[in-house]
Image (cartoon, rainbow, N blue to C red; front, side):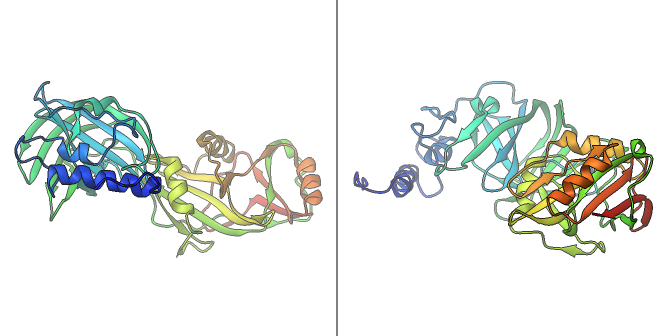
Length: 361
């Protein structure tokens, strides 16, 4: 049944997709033609999406050796692994990305086959369409097949960002898992710590005299919060290192901004101009490298380099050697004080250290 012209666009699109699915059968496959892309086409309207939508059935071509991993900022961030096989890209959605170590397996949800042209697709899938969101190529290259069956796929990947032996194995239904068979991609990388208690400043009445040796930040008067970000997901601990829930929506959005990068971020949840804002002022672990022994100046530079800024989070400013100006600005803005941090100081978890000083204004 064709929807009426005055049907709302969202409902009309759903009706169109339903009609296309009926043409290909309940499972999205065209039994007469054996069309591997019938399910893919049944979910997409070429007039509405910039994705490649071939008119014809897939024709086997190529060497069955192309792979692509696409970063997909849809309803939730995930990565799509696609392997060329018999004229199509056999596809899995991997919520946490390909595992970098054999110590953990990641969920891989088997999705519909995609056309070979999708291996180079990057763009914005419009709202209301299937898979709406931004798609970018995260990595691509070639792969070799060691085994391919209905329940197990063993491959060797050769990419710029990911390489090595992986196995995809079926669990139940459409769910699969992906496991790295080789040693860790980066043997020196370390997993994120389970929990870190924050370093605390000692309270002092005056700013340090040798201000050139210090960096200065505003005291925000908020609640201490550390964020552990991996695979686009975020968990939080409080000022005592205990697991806590973060503000609604913060974890997924912050995780999406960092993408595949792994990090532990220190900061506090403050109320600024009537809005709750996660102010980030330190990075303690980044891309498999603990940074606790790295000087404060270098940690702050690495944090700034991440460019983290969003609707409910922000990288806090810092000012090397300019404590008097920061104190005056804090006083004008009604903030509780200034934090002075030695530029050469390491991060001492759980310690109150004179290398960090809180000075009320």
